[in-house]
Image 1 (spheres, rainbow, N blue to C red):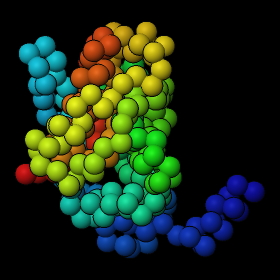
Image 2: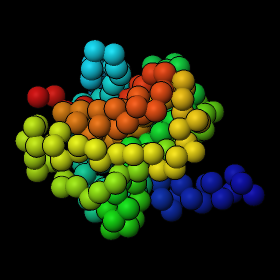
Image 3: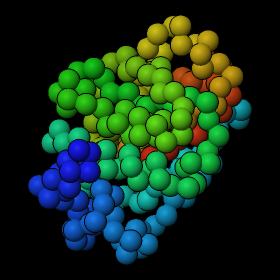
Image 4: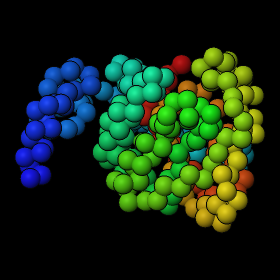
Length: 218
């Protein structure tokens, strides 16, 4: 029965490469040729204070077709993020990151209701399944902020000042001395990630790695 349903599903809605649009034999995201040409995962260590740092791991650069997939969140389209989550979870480099808990960057509840989902949660759940780790929704946004894309680099930092807190005080004991894998879709100036990371370090986490789909090159 499973094989029959699988064949019917592929016939009705066949998979296509998100880059070149050729039809694929299986439910992957990129054909072999396109996968071979995209910039691969790269990692970079960042300092946010004299005693706190993190490493950002970006799957690829913010360019076609990935910028279009990420912009789909503006139109309440969830499917691209399931596809992107699959790509993240299949990356050998990301699979080797040592972590204890996976935490998605949260949206403010008003924006999440308006959009219908949080893309970082979809990505985090894909990674949690592959890495066999727990996803903890430990952070919340305490106020509704402007869209980061409309602001300057300094404005982004001011916009996010004290915007994150623990979503439940009981999470403090769960994250203390833990290696955290923080997940988001896009890394531009790092202002959003660093605001969240500062809050995590304030509650005694051991280390933070940030995984994103794309990094903007300035």
